Image 1 (tube, rainbow, N blue to C red):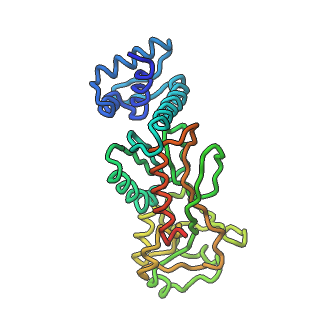
Image 2 (image 1 turned 90 degrees about the vertical axis):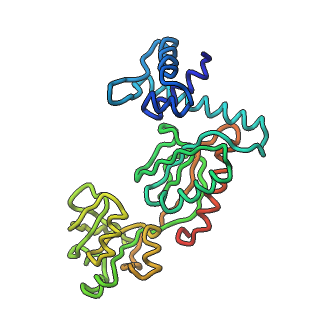
Image 3 (image 1 turned 180 degrees about the vertical axis):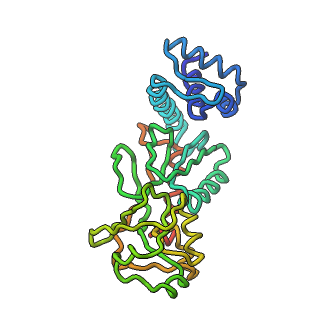
Length: 296
């Protein structure tokens, strides 16, 4: 078995965290995958995986090798695409990541559109409400909300969103509309994924307001559902509640105290060659996101 083949098998098993799943991804039998990984470990003289009956995880040496293997395979794919010509039909696999609710609302429709246009492509989409390291975690394209810290990525700005405080008209009619951020300290506050019993909300005046949530939920759509029922006030990103603002089911408050908007970028790894599969997906998702009124 060639070294590149062994490397590709290793990457598939590492990313799937399973020999069986890696075999399905590659269209190989599980015993063949097991033999390939064993042959690679013999060649390198190191243990690449920790195996139990419940999981497969890369070792520290395996993690270092995984990063290099991904880079090498990606550069070879890009070289092949460059040789085939810029107009070649994209084929292969893409890993895409985005925040959870953003992915559901805006990225999934773009992925469906892309797959319908390019039948030789496959996409793995992972939606997480945390900053994802594309290189370390094996993603090709990401959508990131907020200021960028990683300068090694190619970034295309596609819009911006705001942090907004909102409640239902029924709640505001019954309890009154807060005029100052400090008034939130005495309100029924709903927060999503808070890690402490006391939360600080920052506003444009630079003075944080400490609020103690009456209800904490682990997803943004759960917080939306609660305030839609006329219970409390929450703070979310403007795109997350855009349909409910348009329908009048929710209203924003304290708009004059909103902090500066947060930028939205599509980011991707830059190689020495222009990757056709990445380029075509990025072009499509950038155009779609820029056309969304609630993101601009």
